[in-house]
Length: 50
Image (cartoon, rainbow, N blue to C red):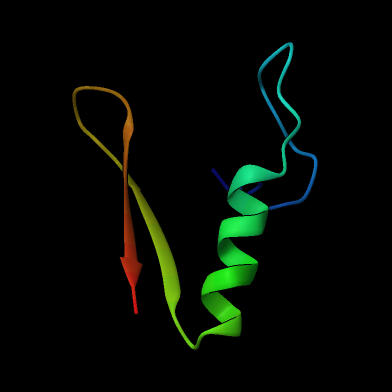
């Protein structure tokens, strides 16, 4: 979880690792935030604050 916003970090064989890094940069450029938390039954929830 600590690396998910790092450019080119991916856990997928064919992933590029730019999606979440780009999302974070766009949100920061517009004075927004991206938050993530684990779900107890698996997966994660992302929150975008504009």
